[in-house]
Length: 129
Image (cartoon, rainbow, N blue to C red; front, side, top):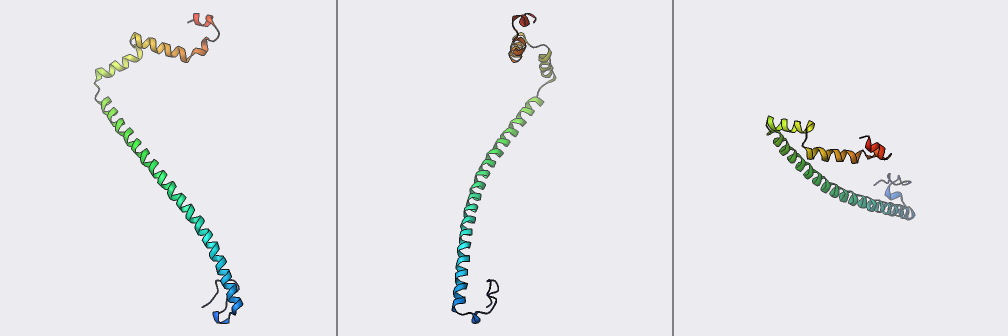
């Protein structure tokens, strides 16, 4: 049996006296304690990694479910648009240039609210409309 891996003990076991054996045992005990500490740290890190993996996996499943729902909704909407006739499409196009009066007034009101900074100067700017 050789102690090549222990510093200072490259000889055989038979050549060691009691003091040398005690020093070897103390060195081994210290190395064992250090390894125990390293093992505990590694064990805690591994447990934290497992917990992170579980949480990320659960979030991933939720995101995949959301993606599947959006894809299904997208397919349904695509099918509804594909089912529209030319007459219906022309009606939608006509709304852009000539919407009903109620819709036009609502759109104008929204535009005025969104661009109200133009009329901060006072009443004269409003009369210029």
